[in-house]
Image 1 (cartoon, rainbow, N blue to C red):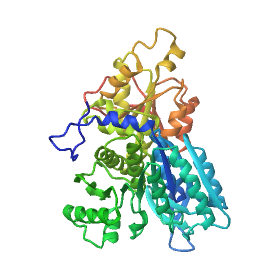
Image 2: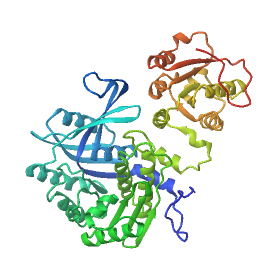
Image 3: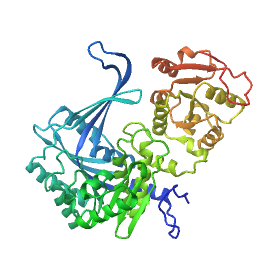
Image 4: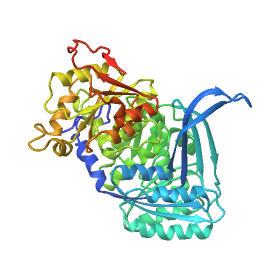
Length: 496
């Protein structure tokens, strides 16, 4: 049985839900998403000078990333949870629309219906980022309602897709897809075939979504829709209850940023304090919460449990850098007791995201790797000296299959779970990441460590991982294993 999340709204007389079991159900669901898709472009670089043409920074571009945004980000989060997802939206006949079609269609378990409207501009948001800070955001968009004939076609497709899925999610970004009478017709269709419908609303006129099972406004949207104060929990409950009654909503879930979430339904109200330990980036947290709520209701979890998972998902999301998604492993790690060393054992995706967060704080990320089967004093010397050469140390651990390919049976003596648990128990190890390949070059390329720590082999210059790290300006350090293990972590004796 899991520990209940800190600060949860569970009443003492209620049975405690098994939240880990609830999370595992999310991957066995199917959800329909309808809404405004957009293309998010992220341009990362370094600023070292000011332009001579104007008093503005010059960004030297290092890499560019394109991702589906808006309703597309809801889809990304659903697929990250393992949910099968149908997606209906509209793009223009331009390059951004073509790029989005490829990006959305390339995701696993997605059935996309991206309708094309000739002459329409696909929403494009371009962000310029240096040292973890946004320098500029440039938007190109068209917010007019989609063509009526296209709206009719969207509705016909939606009715068929509703019948094949358990829950419908409307992600309204005010870009024209869910305009005019489209939301009302979608609510009516969902009711006719007995499907739940959740709305992430936009604007102040919530009558457009009347009859929806759940609406999920933020605090400011709630105030604008009701013209009521929302400065206290009691005021939020009163405004949400007014909104629910006025438009026949089954429930109102108010997202309150650093204050968590509030659920108001026919049974009353519950408050869920924020779950974030660290806040790095709040962008996309609402989409993440919406996806978790949709998947949880598709899994037929109680509404209060679904909101708790949505609240936890938002807390995990803001602890990541950039438009990251939340996976089942993220949930399970967050539900693991804080003191457990097993929290350090992570997937490759989690390791990459954590390394980015550490660098965002200005910390040097180090990497070393090995079989660690069985652990001996030389390993301890490697780990403690490696940790002394960086601020945070990630250890790459060869999987059982990888060890067996290279050393033969009966190796490994200890299975990967046991080797990982022992490594994670060391204070000098900050994360342990398994890899299936024989060599760690692919993992190194994904992590982009600032410091690579290797054992002496007489051929540092020929090491592919070392060449990569030097290529992006990192350091390669060869540990001297003849040193005694220090009583406290110390700077490593090294040759660079």
